[in-house]
Amino acid sequence: MSASRGARRIEIPLADGAVVLEGRFCDEGEGAPAALIAAPHPLYGGSLDVPVVLELAHACAAVGCATLCFNWRGVGASSGAPSGEADLADADYRAALDRLAESASGPLVAAGYSFGAAAALRCSAEDSRVHGLLLVAPPPALLDAALLRNFEGPALLITGSEDALAPATTLEEWTAGSTQVELRVLAGADHFFATTPGAVAEAARAWLQAHFRSSSASA
Image (spheres, rainbow, N blue to C red):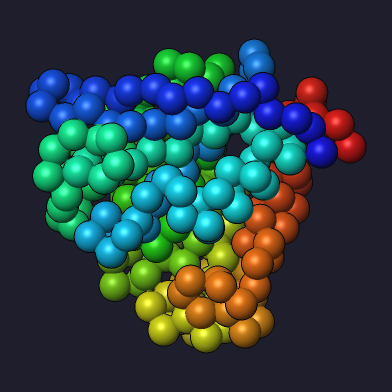
């Protein structure tokens, strides 16, 4: 496992200057791949410190992939009012993606958990900077299956067998026959993965190692 070069707090201003997001950037050096990891719903406790977000960041560090985790507007040290509106979430995610692209020179992976996974998919659909998708418990009610089918890079979806918000049966239908999209169903896990600690990180690490492992990461 490679060692992260250390996390530092950064600010992510939106274009209009009205909102500045709190971010945590872990650098892995020149040319390393980099992942933007979005938290779950800001009105239901979603922040950059929830366990699944931390698991994803750990998985990235294990393969030498830089990470930028951020808090939605109105959460933690991010300014503005908390909101569950998709258009505002997309504005936050795009601003963070721009900030990551400024800081990292390697291929970008758009990642997120639940509400954050939906924003990651929406914002990556037509962004040529994004080379991969890592979506944990993506709720089909918030997604457009066509965006997933049309994404040209590798994608990994992770859900639990007991997840009522991101049901495996629906995601299996969406990914059936795809050579680009992989689906991992974690047995016994629900939407919060509390009964399967470390399983999300392991699934993400294996996929990242196959597709985005940094040349500087140790075996």
